Image (tube, rainbow over all chains, first blue to last red; front, side):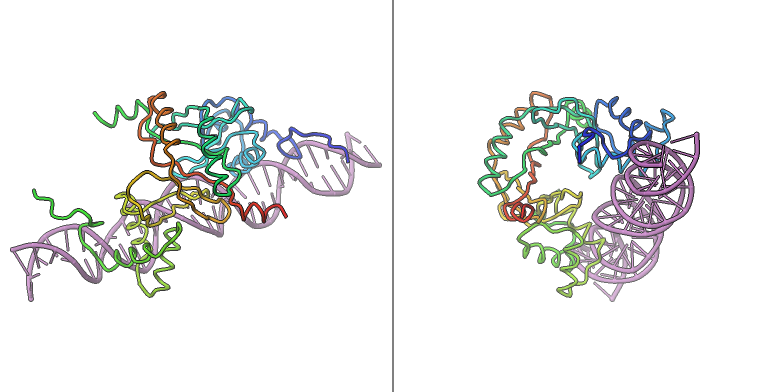
Length: 141
Length: 141
DNA sequence: CCTTTATTGATAACGGTTCTCAATAGTAAC
DNA sequence: GTTACTATTGAGAACCGTTATCAATAAAGG
């Protein structure tokens, strides 16, 4: 049983998957499945909404792309350049501005807390929400 | 304009609100609005589902109770004893086990990161998800 | 008791996501 | 290229948590 391929998202490569990847690579910030679907449509790449959901989900599972939850509970996706090194996201709750941050300190702290409490697999998902400078300014006129 | 009252959830106190509070005080872990509604029903405290949602929302706004989001995106509520001092939650993604942790280190880090990036209001919502000891054990038999 | 109006509750609506299942299209073997 | 197999797709229905609607109810104060 030789392992033929390994970097495929799924067992068969399709037009739809490439289209979704194409859009993802063009993204600089997190987008919802629906937004990605809209972007595809705008590019005349016809892909069903259900397929977008399914494919993004699979890609996120395989960690080919980054997935986070917005504070409203929406799942957001982004192709994330660096696959090495932990990094987290500082996301503006108002406008969605996303900044990637490195967090050795937080890694250490979460690891410590996790260990003390017998938890594992805590490290990868510390996304922090706040209000960015611009939005703060706007909200206090 | 004298401020008459201050610790009331709302402007008028009702049977329904007391019922919800009663259930909340009996909770030791986070529960969804629907679960709380079910608990009320079980206690023969008839309260409409919409009212449960509304009331929990208001209480959480006033920070009379703690609210978090489960990884599935559900809002979960709990009456949280200590009202003083920042604290965060370490929550098992599998079984929902919740541990309250203090995090001066994380406060400092988030503050620093926030300031560096011009963000504000980042401090209060660092809930960390992981897999607790028991669930980890189960998943690797 | 009466009036005012915050609150309630049954139900509809909503929004994001997942499911269904027949149609479509990769893939490997011929 | 053709065939057979089956993974994938897509349109729409279903789902699920939540919010909105709005008439009915019931606190609070006079």
